[in-house]
Length: 530
Image (tube, rainbow, N blue to C red; front, side, top):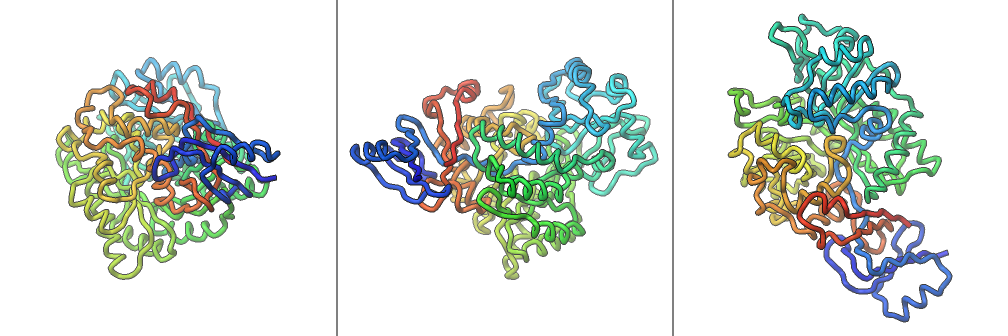
């Protein structure tokens, strides 16, 4: 039986259309698309075929989250405790006590805590965790996933004490006496504890993927680029095996563009080999590799050209030896697969672009995107355009962490953060995403933030100039056709013949929503695939 979709007001991925259009769908693909008159529609409705009548609704291509730790998010949602709502040490105690028995494989794990949203403006003391959790090992990641806190039992299991040296490209937090205070900065430090946590099983992964897919679907998403873990929090081989198992069982609920994180030069060959076992189909595509060049502004590890506020001389750190980074980038480029590079600080961005430029001039190059790409000067934007590099941005960051970003680098330096409009007008391919679990995967947060650029508290909103706001049309493109172009999945992102039959229905039309975040969160997004 043939399937049909009828619309009369839609965004095709590139522009608005206000005419009655029929999409004919075969095997999950738009086989035909044509403008219809009244008689055409009556004939279709009476044909006995399956018809989805979306007339009167606002319709777009299925939305794409172009940069998301989907596997990590799904594991956290199913097996860990959410601390994102904590606003004080008292809140922290309450959440910890209420969930103290949520122990999986012998460990208590949590995520989402953000000291910048807390009354005390610092992470809870290790003594609080020790008092409540006793001998149960604990690890809780900060919302950026670039640092985390643990208790004394976790440090003991990891063999960390006052004599333990900081790992390369990482840091152990210490109190005034030089003893570890339970805070671990960046992957190499966090992995000292994470590597001791028993891994989730293959069945755990499969269950998490299925439940996570359903939640993403309910949020209006049809496709997600999953860039894996941030270290030892995701076993990448188990992740690939879980996806292959779900493919064999025909149980995929969402399309997943799979990228593999690469943490070191030694890791390059292993990840290239691992990519070869992924089984691609209509729901699974290999989307290349991701490298992490620097850290986070909130942990003051993003690699900058200026010192952080109140910390003269601290300009962050690169997470790679730069010689090794360039060699790793060269080896990955030789595969021909897409490569995205985590770059937040301006020095990291410039280093990545210089490395890409050298590869392109030598004839060894692939498709590239800069991830996050916060701090951009005009000359850097021009270079991104010149080198034809995409940008995987997350404009929800303006809303969720805009205030704390400015607190860390200063208001003056914040004026060049997230210049979305400038990049779009320059013709740079800009995609939007959530970086979940850093911010919620619900795309309405990113859509709202793209259009209005308001911060959570409003304290530093004036820094994020409305001159860099995107229109609704430009914003939707960053979640559809532009996302498809940046991640390289050409069958997604637009309502055209030959593309996947993915639709998102909006109720009401975002153009009629108000200017407050609450107004946008009341928009219902329904993801439909035929």
